[in-house]
Length: 205
Image 1 (cartoon, rainbow, N blue to C red):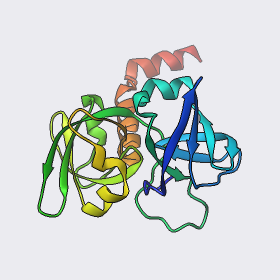
Image 2: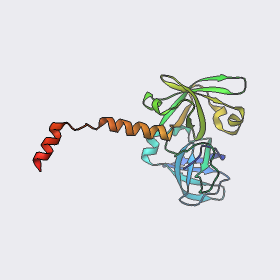
Image 3: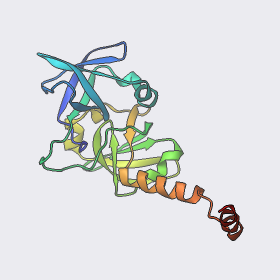
Image 4: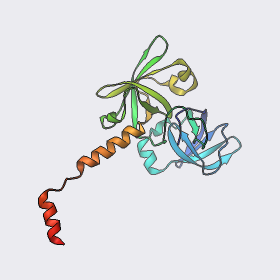
């Protein structure tokens, strides 16, 4: 589990044969979980100047692979007893979003991000969303996108300052909204038995 608070911006050393090697100050142990641009990955090798993680087939299908270059957000998994800031982040990317508009405000910047409409119901106004691993508050939601207002501190401490219209980003929706929607969808899909169904089953016994 993660919090969506970026601890370091790491440099990509290489990405080859689905192995991503990062140059970072963070010193994980083998088997540790690290969120890389919001993706929970397992450390498979460590070095004096960083570590490597492996990307499974399912992961590569969902995330924005083209972003695995240059610099990336990293956050080590939360340890028991750590102070809890941000929000509950699983590191399970749901979809890729696209920045479609950026508007400068008096003390922040509005970012409008378009995503597959299938996931918009899991984006809650005034709730939380994870963008490339960063915990952010949703200001509003429309038919095809949602709007974030990001303060200067967050922009300065993350790679969000490099976003521009057309940038693709990893999105993890709100965990609670996702669970509730899943439960309700499957509850509605279950056919309620009629009295004829009940009588038929009783007859079989």
